[in-house]
Image 1 (tube, rainbow over the protein chains, first blue to last red):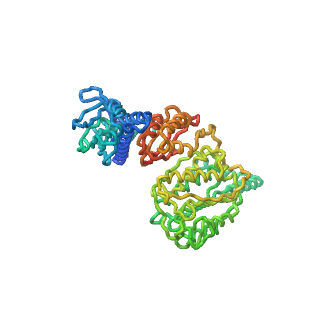
Image 2: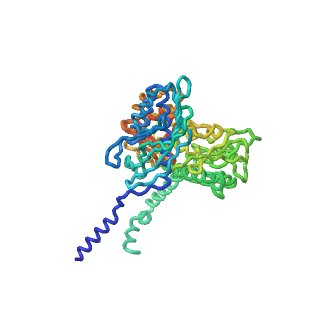
Image 3: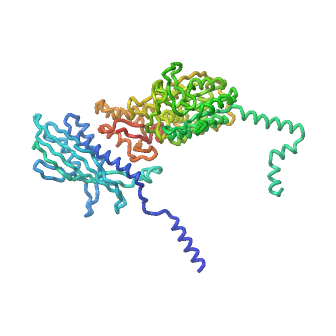
Length: 203
Length: 399
C-alpha cells in the first residue's frame, strides 16, 4: 500500500511538472505587431490589384503581381460542411449585383478586362480589427480595404465603383525553426466579401 | 587549524615559499615580482565620459555606456591586455573629473588608451580651431575633443583612440536631437588575431567624432547614440571575419552603417562622422594571455554588408524598370543565398521577426511592392553557411 502511494505520488508529480499542452496566449504587444503586419498586407493587396489591372505594365509584371497576391491567401480551407475550398472574392457588378468568384479566376480576369484603361486606388485607409483567439486555437481578425475602381474607354470614364471589402484574416502558430516560433504566427487571408458599395455616377 | 585546513595550507604558495631554502626564496620572490610587474604593463585604459544624468539624452547615454564598456572590456581580454576602466558619469560627469583623470593617468609605452565621450557636444561659432566638436561639460565648456585627444596622446602610449558621439552643431546651447535606435547587447565572436591587428598592429593616434562640423548627432532612448551603435556593429563584423581590416576601413564601414541606420531620417537630421587616423604599422607584441586560435575560422560571407544592402534596396527601387530588377534578382540570388534560404522580417525588434519565409518567395514580391521603399539589413542576426552564402537574412522593410 505504501509503495502504491509512493508510485501514485511520483506519477502525480511527474504529470504536474509536464508543460501545459495548450498553446499559451500571445501577449497583446505581440498581437499588435501582427495586426500591423496584416494591415501592411492589405495595403500590398490593393497595390497588387492595381498593378494587375494596369495595362501600361508588362504582362510579366502583372502576372508577378498575381503570384504575389495569391501568396497572401490560404491555398485552401475546409468549410463548415467539411468540404475543401479555395478562397473566394465578392465583386460588385454594374447592375448592382454582387457575385462570388474564385480568387485566382478573379485575378486572371483582371488581366483581360475590356476597358482601355483601368485605375484602381484606395479611397480610405485600410483597417484591421484586433486579433482574437478562436476555438480552433488560431487567431482571427477582419480587415477592411476601400477600393475605387475606374474603367475608361476612349478616354471616357465608363465604369466607376467604390467598394468597402472585408477580408478574413487568420494567424496560425508557425514554428519555423528551432529558435523562432514560440510567438510566431503565420498570417494569411481568407474570403473577401463586399460590405458596402457606393454609388458610381459614371454608370 | 582543522585537518582539512592543514591539507589546503600545504598546497598554498605561501607554504611552498616558507619551506624553500634562502636562494629559492629569493628566486621565488623575483618570479612573483616579475609576474606582478608584467601584469601591470600592457594595459588597455578605457576612459569613458558619459552624461548619464542629462534630462534629454541621459537614457541614451546609459545605453552607450553599457555597450561600450562591455565591448572595450571584451577587446582588452581578446588582445591579452589588462583592463583599466575609468568611468566619469552621473555626478562625476564634469571638467574636474576629466582634469583629474588626465593628470593622474599613468601609462606605459605599450599601453593603449581609448577615450570615449557620449554626451552633448557643440561647435562654438566664435572659434574655428578644430573641425571636431567641443565637449558640453556644463561646468566648463572650454574642452575640445581634439584638445583632450592631444592630452591623451601626450601620455605616449602605443595607440591612442578618442571617440566622441555627440553633436557638432554651430549653436553652443543646442539640444541633442533624439531619434529612434536600439542598443543591443551584442554578443560577439571576436577573433583575437583580428582585434590584435587593429589594436596592436598600429602605433599613433585616432580621433573620431560622430558628427561633422555644424551637425547634430542623433540618439535613441532604446539604443543609444546612432554612431556608437554603428561603430559597435562595424567592429563586431570586422573582428568576425575581416582579416585585412585597418582603421581607415573600419571607420569607413562604421560611417556606411551610420548612413544605413539613418536612412529613414530627413536630410536635415542626418549626420556623418569625421575622423583622423595618424597611425603607422607597428611590430605586434605577443599578447600575454592570448586566446587560443579557433580550430575552424568562420566563413566570411560572399558579399559585404554594403553589397547586400545595395542589392536589396535595388530590388525595391521603382525608378529601375521591373524587367531590369527581375534580371538582377535572378542573377544575384543564387550567388548570395544558399538553397532554401529564409528571410526574417521584423517590425519593432530584430530579435522578434513577424514573418519568416523562403527568400525565393519573398524577393519576387519585392519587385511588385511599391509600398516597400527600402530595407535595413541586420547582419548580426543573419546566418552564413559553409560556402559563404546566406541561409538566413534578417531585414526591416522601410515603408
